[in-house]
Amino acid sequence: MKKILNPIWIFILLLLPAGLAAGSYYYRDTFTTLSTFWSNEFDMGKDLIRIPQAENSRQYATNGRLIIKGCPNNDGGTPDSIYNGIFVGECVRNEKIWSASETQPFGFEIIRKKSLLNCHNSSGYGELPDRGWVDAGIWLAVDNGARALNEAFYDYVYFADHLRVSQTNEHASRIGYFDGVQHDFMNMGAVTNFFGNVINLTNNSIHSLRWDYRPRDQNSPNCVSNTNSIGFRITHNGSRIDFYVNPDPDNNDAYPSEWLKIGSKDVLWNTGMKIMVGHHVRIMLTRQQTAHFDELLVRSTTDKSKASISPELVPVSPEPQKLVYTISNSIKPENAGINVIRITKPAICRWATGPVDDIVVKDYYKDDPGEQVLRTVPVNPGEYPADDQVGVMTDGNKITLLLGSQITHKSRPERENIKVEFNFIIAQKFESGEFTSTIEAVQMERMPLAKKGRYSTCGEQRTEEKVIIRPLRQMLMDGTHAYGPFFPGGELTGSPETAFRTVGPFLDLKPCAVKGFEAQKEF
Image (tube, one colour):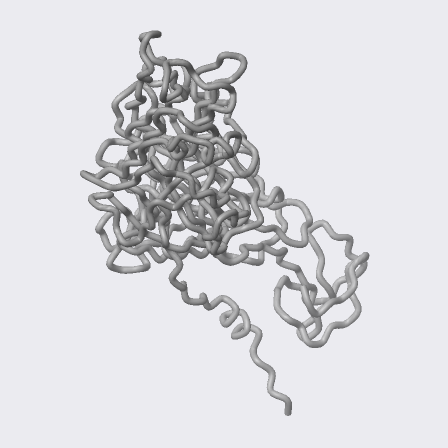
């Protein structure tokens, strides 16, 4: 007789979780010295073409600062003037190699402590013409091995503060990115934060992110340095790069000390990437393009995270039903952990009452051995949730959960997990519904000081595994035979003497007893 595996065992085997493989990033450089991970005096222009003409550029680390100073094209004479109109530059290149994907995103940040961008002619007081374009900033670039004269990197973004003496006599610097074409972020007066609030980053002349470097004395060529600390961050999720600034990383001025997204760019490259820091000029004999940077940081949210849901088979019913969404995490001590969860639900799942009432979040934020039930509250932009709270914010089918107590590395791995219980009504017919989720650790202005400092630099990390619910089919049976699946409200043409609801793989199906449906073995 042919042996058949019991359907219950099939179901259990399918639910057994796979192991969580390692996959996170952590790297910090405080620039006490220029470590062996860096190659300095890398002569490469802004468009990453090798033009070794940076005779007056220096890069070094001292006292916790990475210093980029001088002018990359300032040696004088005919050999340099032939590069006028072309970006000449020099940088330091970090030799660590990075890759990025949705489930293992990459990102890095660096704090600029000081900047001096001077377009004045080094032999006089006048500003140079429109080609007098100077900048200092950071790259994320694919290192294809280009080292010889006129060889180039082709896949890159350069994120920088730049100054260009334009024909319109505009002297304020701009922040933008360069990928062969300059893209300036012109929305700096209307940047939105985590809560969707609009912030103007140009309305304070003392701390504005658009800086006027011109001399305050018209008879002097000495430009005014910008000593306001600004954080620059680039994240990469495998197909999209996002650009962030922190307008007040030292928490010293009127701007918020948090990372604000100011732009994005879709890309096709995501492996073999390196970090570089440097400066450029597009005309010879400018005075100074100097920047001081403090601490480079790369930190993932978790080592690995996977989502699942129970039950996976749900009845179509006008009655509320509970679905438990579990995010299983592996968090290393050096990982940031989690304080933000974003879950996108399928449209077929409707709230029974409302998101705050229909969501229950459980985790192990205390040292107690058992799960803790967090109190759900509406997100309040002016107040960070308490340790035992979770802020709830919705936008259509997207649900954002802000944890008052960040989930970090625990001695027992199961205490790094999070459960989100939903109370949904699923009343319409459907074939399948997919949930997606991301996790992150963010820093916000409204956080208590004790909770700041431990955040991820890599952006949203998508949880692994597809999370899909399917309808619980209802079968009419007469003891041994199934007469077909139907949804509640289906029109019956007949009924066996003994009828009940069940689910599972049936090996012997008789003709369907429900009008409009055919018997099936798989569902």
